[in-house]
Length: 419
Image (cartoon, rainbow, N blue to C red):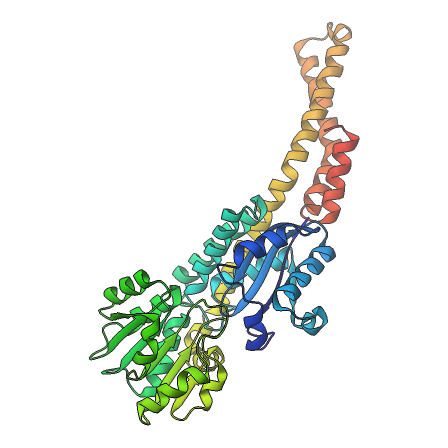
C-alpha cells in the first residue's frame, strides 16, 4: 500500500475553481466518509485551506485511489474530471512525505513561512481522527509533519516578519489606506483568520474595531478581547455605511455580499471610499462589487501579489528549511521501513531458530558424547548457517520495504514459512 496525495492549490488553478473544491468544516465529515468508502482508498485526511484542497490517503491500489479521489473532486465541484484533471498534482510515498513536510514547514504557501498552516495541518489530522477516517500510517506521517513545521520555525528565520495570511491582509490594507490610525474597521467573521486579523488591528491608535459573526457569542468574545464592539449580522449593512475598511473571512459556502446588497450602502456613504479585503475561501464578496463607485475590492490573488514584495530575507532561509525537511523525511522513511518489515523479519528468525533448536533436540541422543567445547561448536555452526541463510532475504526485504515489491516479498515469506 502507498501513501498518496492528490490536490489543487493556488499555483495550479484559478481562484474560481479552487473555491469550488474548498471543503468547509461543516462539509468535512461527509467528504471524509465518502472518500474512506471508495474502493481503493484506505486511511484518508483532507487538508482544505484558503490556498489548497488536498487529499492524503493510504492507497490500496495507486492508480485506482487517484481515480477515486479525482472523481470525488469532480462530485464536490460539479465539474467534469477532464475539465480540471490537468491541474491536479499527485505525489506518492516519498514524494507525498516530502510534499506534506514542505506544506507544514511553510515553504509551499502563498506567504512563505506562514504561521497558520501548521495549525491547519494539525486540525486536518485531528478532524480525520474524530471521524474515524485515518489510522496508524497517516498518524505517523502527520505527527512527523508537525515536528518538521516546529523545527523550521524555531531553527530558521522562515517565520520572521508578516508570515500569516491575516497579517498580510492587514498590512496590505494599511498600505492601501496609508495608515489604519483613526480608521473604522469592520471584521466579518470571527474564526481563526478573523481572530488573527482582529488581533493585528487591535491597539492601533484611534482605530475603532467592529466584529460581526454568525455566532453572536463569538463576535462578543472577540470584540471584547480586542477592545472593539460586536455587531449583529443584520446590522452589518448599517455598519458598512460608516467604516473605512471591511476585512472578511467567514466560512460561508458562497458569497454573502453582492452588488445588490452593497449598492444602497455606497449611496449612503456619499462618495466616501470603502476598502474591502476578502480572504475567505470561498469568497464572501461577489467580484461584481468592485464595479461600484468608491469601492476597492481585494481578494486572495491580491494578497498573493502583495506578499511577493517582502520575501527576500525569508527566501534566504528556504535552503535551511529544505535541509530540515530532507533530514526528517529520511528519518521518517527509515522508521516506516523498520515498522513494516520488522515483524516479518522477527517472525522469520524466530521460526528458523525454533527449527534449529528442534533439530538439535531430535538428535540429542547422538550428541550426548560431545564435551562442552564440542557442543558450543555445534551451536555456533548451526547458528552461523542460519545467519548466512537468512542474511540475503533479510537485506532484500529491508531494501524493498514500503514498495509493492516489498509487500510481495513479505507475503511470500509469510506463506512459504507459515509465519
